[in-house]
Image 1 (cartoon, rainbow, N blue to C red):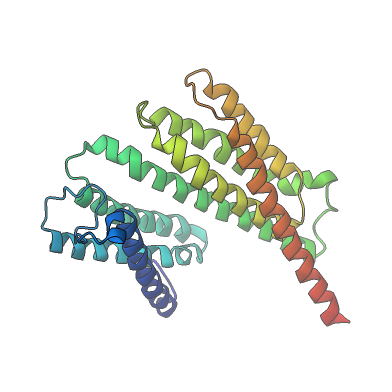
Image 2: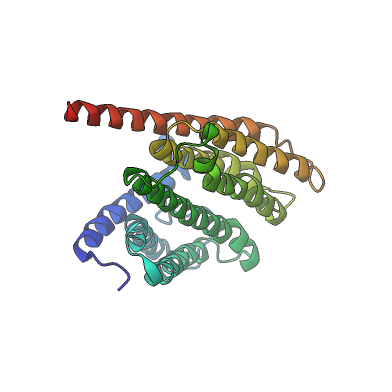
Length: 283
C-alpha cells in the first residue's frame, strides 16, 4: 500500500483538498481583477481563457483538479513514513500522481501552447521542488540518526563550528544554490525568463534556504557554516552564469544569506527553548 494509516490519510486529503479549492478561488480572483470594479466574473477561472471546453465544465474540472492536487499535497509526508525498500517506490508513485494532476490542469488551461514549453514552465519546477523536499527529508533523517547516537552516548563531541554536523546540509546547499539555478537558467527562454526571474529568487531559493536552515538549527543549534555555504554556492552560480547569460544575479546572494541565516537562527532558538523546558521538567 502507498500509505499505512488510511484514516489519517483521509483526513489530510480532505483538508488539503478544501485548501486547494480555496487557493483556486484566490487565483481566479487575482487573474480577474475586473471583479473589483463591477465586471462580470467568468466561470473559466483560467489564466489564458482559451480552454477548449465550455466555461462551466472548465470551472468544474478546475475545482476537481485543484481539490485533487491539494489532497495529494496534504498526504505528501505520509509516503515518507515508511522505510526500507518501500520508500522509493512510494515516493515515485506519489510524484507520478501529482505530476499527472498538474499536467491535466496545464493542458486544460493552455491547450494551444507547445508541450515542450509547458513542461519546462510547469513540470520542471514542480519536479525540482519535489526533489529538493525529498533530499531535504533525507538530510533530516541523517540528523535524526545523529541525535539518537548522541543520546546513546555514541556520538563524538561537537566539531569545530559544527562542520561535521553541517556537512550533509552543505551538499544540499550546493544543489539548491548552484545546480538548480543553473538548470533553470539553461531551460529558461531568453525572451521571458520566468523561472530565473520570478520562480527561483522569490519562491524556491527563499523557501529552500529557510526550511533547510530551520531544520538544521532545530536539530544541531546555530551552525554558522551553513549560511556561509549557501552564499558560496550562490556566488559560484553568479560567477558561472556570467559566462552564458547577462542577468543581474547579485541579489541572490542577499536572499540566500538572509533566509538560510534566519531559518537557522529560528531553529536554534526553538532547540534552546526545548532544552530549557526539558531542564525545568527535570528540576
